[in-house]
Length: 247
Image (cartoon, rainbow, N blue to C red; front, top):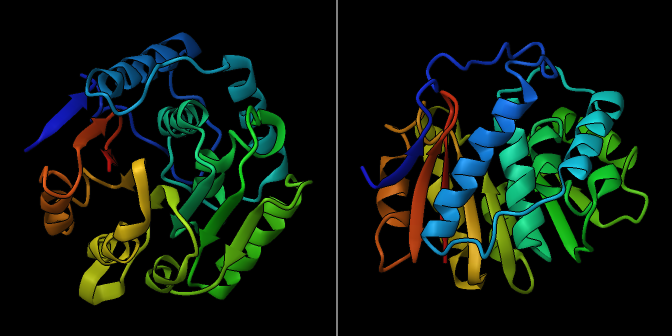
């Protein structure tokens, strides 16, 4: 199965997808669950420390609640905090987020460098969404909070984005869908297109590592092979899951 961090109540901790800002547990518990997951990454040498600014994270969450149009989301509060924290700790200068829908998943990764939760300066943060209406919604959402223009929304195939991206990639977030034929299996195509330009120590975050594990079998085999990625850990804090891998 590979390395994993699994919280005991992950099956019971479930989102109401239509209520993206609903609190699911006391804040102290959410913070401790995420802190334990970060410690797991630190144990495997995937991040250098586990410290991030909780006030900045709260400001990020308020900003998203007030400024973003989110029709629905599978990103739970735990996952939102975890992705924000990983970005705040690793501080990627460049990011590609593939399959961003309305931009909520994108800002969960990019929010440590953009808007009210910003704690460092990034160079280039690219969100990719193949559906034109969804991509336009993401643009509107990001425009409301990105005053410095560091984010970019592309409406195209994420494999093409990864293949043509100039320079190194410090973080790659995967949440795309390849349609009936490939589904979440498209993750491996995107990763392979980006692989040669992943920075040493670059992180790859793959959503749906639990509920779409069957479709992700080849992807998970790839990232869990030390010949390809230095470490890979399945973070199971909710029924969706997130595989975190480091180059």
